[in-house]
Image 1 (cartoon, rainbow, N blue to C red):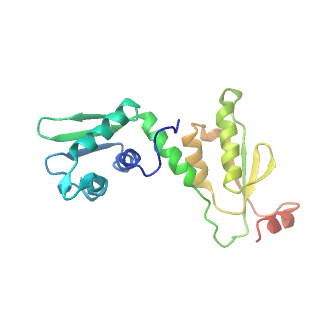
Image 2 (cartoon, one colour):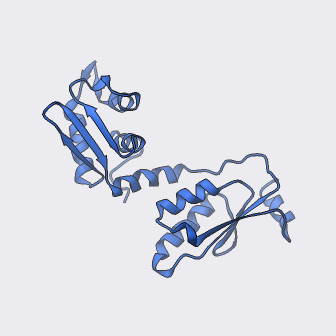
Length: 190
């Protein structure tokens, strides 16, 4: 899924910008620097020696469209609309998922216990969720039961949306104490 699109490349920046714009972006090709701040930041990469590199921008758009990550249209008045496809949204979310980390604040004395029971037909999603939770530093108590001392509800919601796991299959519990918690306090250096 990731082949050919490097992080922070020009095409990747287009995808991120369109996602920030709510999935649809309107750009004036006549005066590209006259748009909103978010668009100006994107288009700055297409200026060299104070000259607008329109061809390079359109070439990157065509590549993204060929890969079915965006849909774009150029109008006679010089405006271009860029729409992120479902596959494009997934691609951007996967990059964000790769950089995700749990915020390690001072421990509030609560444990976050995450359990999941994902149907067999979603085996790949289940394995991906399990791997990502390990990557984030969750402690595995069982195959589908993980523990962390840090708040993680937003991260769990995001992971579920990326892997298309119904959130009702994942349960998050806040637990104040349990048998053997001293061992895990030591594990997390609390």
